[in-house]
Structures are given as structure tokens and as C-alpha cells.
Length: 228
Length: 257
Image (tube, rainbow over all chains, first blue to last red; front, side):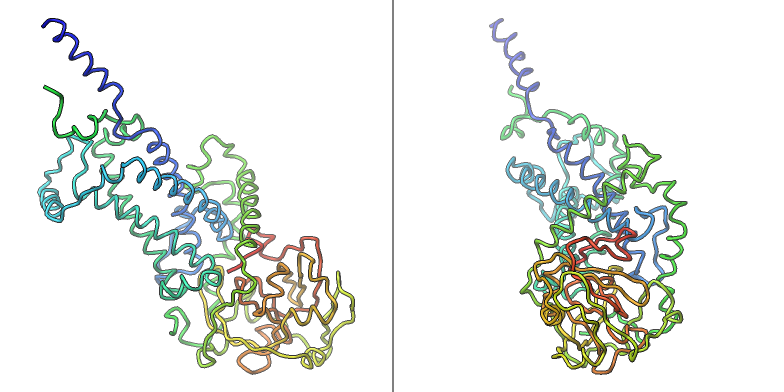
């Protein structure tokens, strides 16, 4: 009996010590690489936008524009695009292959989304356990991933409207594709504002994206908790 | 399918307002180069912040790499979408690196088109020589690097036909242009041979108007607007990179669409 009592916790500790972290190192690297690339793509995009605005009278001041004028904004954008696409493709492949997307982002139940929105409006934001995403978080992450994919597609369309003329007409024409590319940026910036604000409100989530965060229970036993 | 971005009124001098920020920032450039925007600071962590030229040369290296990728993506048989003649914007949109009032009209009678470089026949061409060549028309979209676009109708001599007539080396890398307004430009041979690349003499069925390049301009459906020099005075076929006006200021050279 004594042996069992002393050994059982030891095994448990070892299991916990070697368990996966909330954010494995590939996710952390890709997250921060993507953070830098997104800032480059967004601010250089604002520089390009400002040369011929879509919304009359709506400009970005030079502080917000990467590149001192359009040529350099364009060069930043066309350099950043490679890093965005390469990092993004590895992220998507990793998310699917590792099961991370399925595990963290699915399923989303509409009732849960509604409940989370109601709770949030009542300032009941649960964040004791940062290893579980609520339905709204899941939805926002899925939206921003899709917006990122959409930016690449609309970006290709306005970069090469003749070579990919079929894609352009599918999107409703060159100017519509251009507006969609701008709208995609707006969605991503909207996400970023919420994402960064919440990360700053709950700093342990920010630290988790640096250190890896809490260790996860072995997959498939998540609901059982520690073995009794 | 009228673009909501196409101007409702014919262009006048006010269209230049669009470019005033660009011209201002050109003047400001040296000043701004000393400082850095927020995004640049993020990227530059670890780099020598006092030497943004290092960043510029890195960006230019990637831009040259992109020129190569664009050449690979270019399908010489892919035609740009064409439109009905009724959709042609009249007059076309004026755009240059200077004011429409500063356009210096070219005399079509004394004008000559010089031909040089890797060609068999270096005889200069008159306007009537060019008008005697077979003509082609196309109604295509003009897309500016800034983002605006309009539909224009162009008639002229296919550049391929012209290059064949002068016995150009069609395996040469570049076709370069010089213009009366000192706006050098150049394109790759594959784009020069594309069926929608014309030495345009007419717009919307009428002789080109002075602000739009009379007597001759390049008009290619497979490049951004700035690769379409107006008031062309000389064509050179060469293997030596000729560059161009905006390219020397940092814009990508290939600029294919």
C-alpha cells in the first residue's frame, strides 16, 4: 500500500511534466512571426490605399503608413506577402495535421455563442481556465483565419487581374476585389483590436503565448480530470 | 458593368489632386527616411535603425525576385478581358508625373520614331509609315498601380508586328522606350510580343489627343498603367536592363497584371 501511495503521484507528476503545453513551440513561433508580418502587411497596405482611397476623404496619416511613399509601401507589401503565405500555409498544415484546429476551435454551438455574448454583456467573462476557448473565441479565431485566407485570394486577384481573370470575375470585378481586400483588412484589424485588448486584460494569456502556457491533460481524458 | 470608381465628369486639372500627396511625399522623402514608421520599427528590431538603406536594398532584392516570379506567372497566350466599345471612357483619364497643363504637344509631321539596338533595320519611322501598317483595336481595362481603373479603346500597330518588320531579335530580353516627356520605360520581350500590346495611334476611334500621347504611345493590357509610356520617340531592343522612370524611384519593374 505504501508503495502504491508514494508511486502513483510520481507517475502523475511525470505525465503532467511531459504533457503538451497549451501552445506548443511551433504555434508560438508562427504566432509571433505572423504578428510582425500582419503589422507589415496592414500598415504597408494603408500606404498603398492612401495613394487612391476607396472611401472618399478617408486617409491614413503618415504615422500609420509603412513606406515613406507608395513605391516603398508596395515593396513592403510585395515582400511581406511571401512570409505571410509561407507562415500561413505551415500554420494551416500544422493546425490540421496536429488536430489543434479540431481540438481548440470545434465544435461551435450557436446556443453557446449566444450565451457567451449575453455573459460578456453582463461583464461575466470567464477566464480562469485559459486552456478552454469559449464559443465566441472559437468563432473569432475561425473568422480571422478565414479572413487571412480571403486576403491572400483577393490579393492574388488584384495583383494579377489578367493572369487570374477568372478569379477576378468570380469576385465581381477588379474594383470589387479591391474593396473586398480592403474589407478583409478591416475584419482583421477589428479582430486585432479585440484580441490585443483581451490579451492585455488577461495578461496570463499573453504570457502563455510566450512560455507555452499551462500543460494540458492527456487528450481524450480531458473530462475525467486527474485519475483518482 | 460601370465601375463605381470611374469619374462622372471628364477629367480636368483637378484629377491631379489625387497625386499631390505623392509629389509632396517625394519632396519629404529624404526627411522621412531619417525617421521610421511604426511597422518599420517592429521589423527593424536588431537592425541598424540609422541605415534604412539596408532595408531598402533588401526590399529591392525581393522586388527583383518578384520580377522573376511575375515573368514565370506570365502566360503569353492569356488574353486580358475585353469590353464593349460603348464602355470606353471619353476622354481617357489623364495621368503623368506632372500637371496636364504642362503637357508639351508633339508635332506629328516632324515626329520620327527611332529604332535601335538588336534590330536589322534601324531606319526611322514617320507617322504615315506607321499608319500604313496593319492596325488592331482593343477595348481593355487600364489598371493603375494606385488602384484606380478605367476602360479604354485603343487602335494601333501590334508591337509584335512592328518588331518583326524591323527584324528585331525576338529572343532579346527587353524592349525599351524613350519619350518626348523624358519618361523612359521598358518591358520584357514576352509582354512585348503579347497580342494585346500595341503601338497605339488612336483612342476610341479618333487620333490620340495631345495629353494622351499623340502621335504614338505604348498600350499593353498585361502591365500596370505606368508601363505605358506616351509620346514615344524611340524604341530599343536590348539585353541590357533599361529600367524606367518610376522604376528608378523604387516601383517594381515587371509590373505585370
